[in-house]
Structures are given as structure tokens and as C-alpha cells.
Length: 245
Length: 191
Image (cartoon, rainbow over all chains, first blue to last red; front, side, top):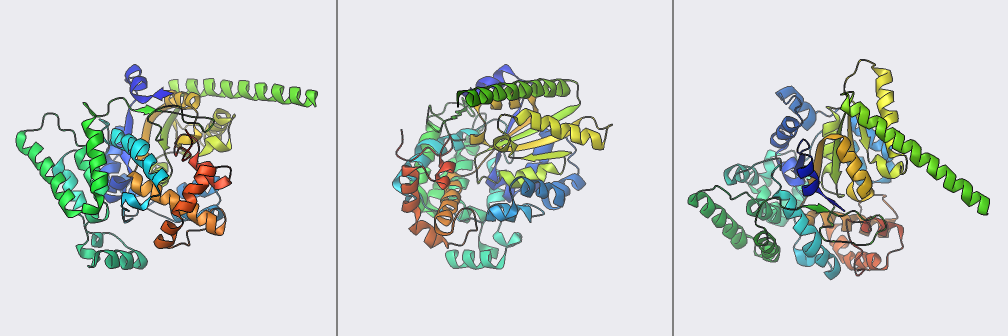
């Protein structure tokens, strides 16, 4: 078993940066600028353009070299990409999952997800205001494929220019807001976070079960990024808590 | 039969020793500033592949999920790739390598070794609702059309098959269930 927390305490020269897949695709310039900065790599406009939307085909070719293109629709999609695509997958309600998978999601994967979101070095927005700017982005601002546009407009009953990322990903939005570091915030900022969480609850009742789980996980923590444990199991058997990755 | 087993054990020991030597060599290269490693660790379906593709643009060598494929010779493989890059450009210092791996493919031992080599270490996560839905979609499609052909099923059809997927995970044993094993998705019903 490897405790990241313990390992990184022993090796302060090492830094783990957590990247959330939603933020990465919703705000690739912001997240990648921070990632490159953390790597002490150049993060000028030209470099950012290269890593966000002008990928050299040889970089994606290294994926298809490792996993043949014909082997997976997903790999084929990534291999043909030249940049990040927006996060337009609609979050399913928790009850859609069969009971066993649901239990796994609640008991194992979600706590680890929240642990990592609260990690001190998570790339991306750190304040509610910064986060809200990203959550408010409308799908119309992105390059959307016709079939995606059709599905989104059918599901939400309005034009993509009016559908926000928050509406598509309300659980992610709730998790990100709830995981913001509240230390050293003044009363107004704390109140704004509480208000935002209440607003998400009112706006997206089908996800209240997930919101309750997030609240329960957060209330069990006393410090952000505390004690993240990665459990490695070589023989396929569960051996401990926190086995999400 | 016994001598065949003996030969295999000896071969494995030699291979392990060679890989340990390769790891020690990589450590020296990192220490001397000849090599810089960025490591990305992630569960499947978290956007870690696009993240890898993106970062590969600012590295000299990209190694996509190499550890399972080269199991037992992981560090030998990484060293080979370093040497290939050095052959192309002898003056390159450091040679920058980015490695992306699915977390469950990496043993505790290897994770610690990679952490000790890596200058930059990233974990990619994603809302488990979307991540697990994506995995259920993968498995449902595998069940319907054979392994990893394509995602042909509509969302409704995927959810119709979700219980079938769960049943498959409970029973285990099939190839598609392999992705559920290890430390990412605990086999449902198995304690």
C-alpha cells in the first residue's frame, strides 16, 4: 500500500498535481498553464496553443502505436484529435446505476474523488468566482458536433447557446464548489459557497442523493487533501480503504 | 517438466535482475540531469489520454500505458526509449519522457519506483458518475458487439444492459470483467 500523503511528506521535493478531467476540458488554457508552470516548463501563448489545440500528430500516434486504432472507439477518437474537446457528457442520476455499481461509486470511488479534489495542488480555479466563470460557460462557446448538439438540445429543451456546463455536469459542479478550500475565507465568501450549494440543490433535484453523499464525505474531513491513500492490489482482491485508482 | 520450470525460474530471475539494473541506471540518469520523467497516473475514462497527448507535445518521448505491456521489463523498456532518443540527438539534456499509465496496472512497488524517478507527478480524476457510466458503456458495447469494436449502443440501450454488465462483473472470469478487477472497480459482490 502506498500512502501518497506519507510519501510526499518524506519527499518534499516531489509534487503531486491533481487534474480534474472536467476542468481540464472546460478550461484547457487555464489548467494547462498551471500544469506547465508546476512543471517549470514554458507556458507562453505559443506553447499553450500547442498543448491545448494544436497537437502534433506524432503525439497521438504514440497512443495508437501502443493500442491499435482498430482496438477501441475511444482510442480512435483520441488518436484523431488535435486538441481538447469540451466536457459535454450529461451526468446520469445515481439511481441509473445497478445497486452493486452504485454502492461502489458511493463507498469507494466518490470519497477518493473528493479527496483528490481537495488536494492542495489541484490545477484549476481556486475560488468560487473563478469556478463560477467556468461553470457558466455555454455549450455554444465550444465546437460541438451536430449529433452532440441535437442530443443536448433535445435533453434540455433549449438551444446550446443557452445550456451551461453546470447544467450538464451538476454533480461535478457541486463537488468542485463543496471541495473549495474554506480556510481563511471571510464570512461573506463562506456564505456565498453555502448559497451556491443550496442553489444547485434547488436547481437539480434528481442529483440530491449525490449531493448528500458529497456533503457526508466533506463533513468527514478536517483538512483538505488529508491522507490520500492509494491501494494497489496485484491479484484483484480488495485489501483496504481508498482503492479508487 | 521440472527442468522446464527450473529454466523458466532462472529466466525470470535474470530478467528481474536486468530490470533492477535498468532502474538503477535510470536513477543515475535522473540524478545527473540527463533524464526528466513526467508520470501521469489515472483510472480509465478520466480524460487522462487527452492529457497525455497534450503533454507529449512538450516532451521528447511519450510512452502510453507501457507498464502492462512490458510487465517485468518496465524499466528496461523505459531505458531503451531513453537510449533511442539519445541516439537521435546526443546533445539532448535532459531527455524528457512522459509516461501515462492506468493506475491498476501499476503495482505498489513500481509506483514507488516511478515516483522516485519522476520530476512531475500527476493524478487525473473525474466525477465517478461520468467515469463509471463511460465504463458501463464500454462493457455494454463489448457484450453486444465483441470486445472494443465501437460504441454503437444508444444511451438508453446501454442503461438497459447495465444490470447485465453488473452481473458479468459479479461472475467475473470473462475478459471484459478484467477491467473491473484490480484496485479500480472492485468486483461487485466480491469482498
